[in-house]
Image (cartoon, rainbow, N blue to C red; front, side):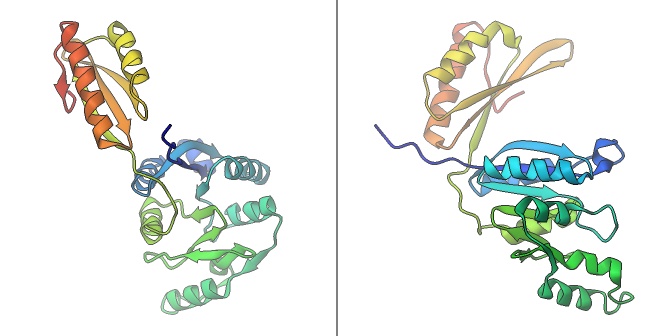
Length: 253
């Protein structure tokens, strides 16, 4: 029997009262998921928590234990409610320290911007033993401690930090996808979807229904780490839809 390729997984912890209140709309989940897939890592779960020490500690310890990697966004700024570093340090059982390289980076960045004050120095605080993730946009670096990657909440800054991490994490094969669309109620072809997925290893079929122009339809997204399996499943699904008197639309509707 062929050995099953290892699947590397990650979780994302989104931290911030502003997300839960609806004041700020999160845009990091999609970009983190997309970036992880390119690295051959699957985003398995996302949790959103408030700026609450106990909630962050519990989430960090749970998510880092059952995934290869944990990414966090938010709560590493200069204000009193930015408590992510403190919470993660507590979860890890280490002290919070000023990272000398982070301090130097901030001193240089703020040299012509009013200088490094006490609030700005907070952004040099890290859990003891951490390394830094470069931030080319606003100076204040992200933080890595073991399998935990602590990043900013601002999407454009997060994107830059992810770019700096590209190619540095161990992962597997990226997940590929193909879409087959059909003007059909998904309930009418549920058995076909189930059977097609069952007959093909290393694939998942997701069904995404829609209502458009007064008609019901669905797009079926097939995911696999193998291009050959992806093609086989797409063909099998299209053939099955045709046999049921339905027209399959390659690429989706």
